[in-house]
Amino acid sequence: MHLLSALVALATDKLWDTMLPDMARLLPPQEKERFFLCAGLLLGLITLSATLTQRWVDRDGLGVALAKGLAMGVLAGLPYSFGSTALGLIFIGWSGINELQKFEQ
Image (cartoon, rainbow, N blue to C red; front, side):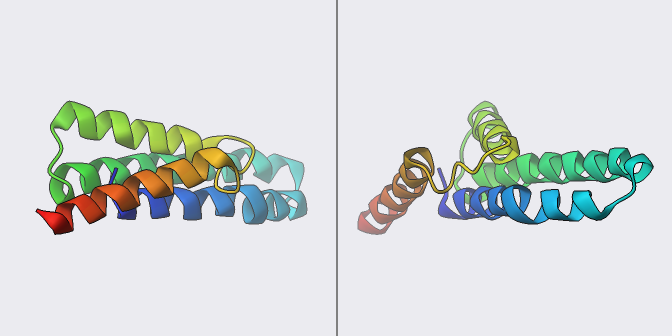
């Protein structure tokens, strides 16, 4: 897992966890559907961003990059914050260890 993919997913997770629900509360009921559709598209962009980062920066195969990008998009879209849990720390640690291994080679 590339560090950039993990950081983008964590930043989006925090955005989804704190800022987006507060913004949605202020909207009239008929506008909430459009707002959450746009938020879903944002999560799709996160999946695409993580996939492209894994493919072109980390040089993963297409299938592996797509699987990692999809996993990061799903984790960022969960209705609770995974970045403040042990799972988020595992992803950051995993990506940091991968980066350190690359420097040694």
